[in-house]
Length: 165
Length: 165
Image (cartoon, rainbow over all chains, first blue to last red; front, side, top):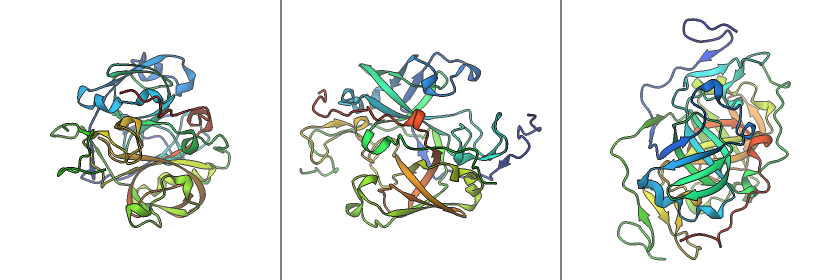
């Protein structure tokens, strides 16, 4: 599928973004992964067994206390190379355009990505985890404990065939 | 448990936050819930059957296209009243202080909250959802489809007794 001079594919739409931000983020660390180019990244975190490293900056490392009681974590990180205005997107292999909020694409008004990872070990200010799919060096925003009671919904479904116009 | 003049409880630690933000966020809408004061909010989204409303600003509403194919969504929202520097916390009913990243407390360096909700209906630029626990008027940051394959981990556990010092 071709793109025009602005990198927009047919059927895609851009939203006009405000002139000013409403809130600000601190990068609290970095994600270290084996993937140095976008085309090398797995499609999702389950497609690779690679053990990746969460580097937490020293100022925030006291926040890791008691984390080894968790078998799984939610990581929030910043897709700093994503286009933020793309509000309707044409995924490469989809039969028509999709709303950004129906996709996990990094291109979104606030490019915060989320992965559920398995916590393998803590080594000082580092966490070894399995289940990431992002580029090496991606900025880290948050680490949360994963609770099966509230975060696990095995019955959830995504029906692409039923996509409304 | 008492608090000192800075609102810090015994055992709690503050991190020095940087002078400048690393990235900026746009508020893309608001969450409408029945809860007008913090003490009225349910402890988590499963403790209430209330149907809440996601109001998406008109500029971002095209991003809702094809969302009704999803039975469940992940909502990211901004806990705009939270203390950002609190890196070790003493939860009211815990036997000792915990690292912020082992807790789902709104107080964290980047106060991005996450809820998995059931999508009941879309009505124009509004979504009706079940599973929220936040204050009425909370700023919305993102909406993502929930994929059971990557987001559901029924086997996950959080062992508070095993909390390291």
